[in-house]
Length: 171
Image (cartoon, one colour):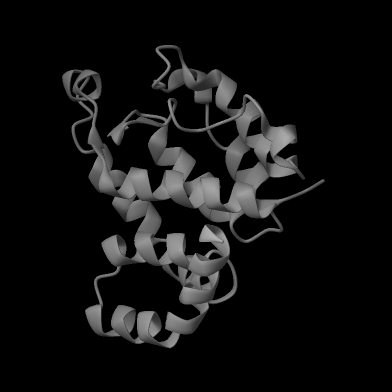
């Protein structure tokens, strides 16, 4: 199946990128593919991005291309739990900071790189807020949106949708 996310995934030499698990990120394409194809949480057991692109909001080199892959994936049909996992990973990527090992390796600005990559998908995230996982999309937008008036307008317009989703999650 041809998809934007898979094409974006193929653009990177993941084996040359550092990963939070202590190995190269060569295994991340398999993780992304499994998540993209998952129809149920059971299909995704053992396939997570946390602990790889970030560990407790500490970013690793693989986070930057992962942001691009996540944004491409958000344009596609995904299981709701995968969509949420991608958005939470994106939130950690734009709100985190470089792990000390990355700073030592000269990649002290991974947070800024992730922020800039995420801003490239600003309208993908607004679309997600309007039609998908409103809460997590708005959380990311709150960090990356530089137009406070636009963000405030969307947040206000989506308040009822957000409340319904939050109620559904807690109930």
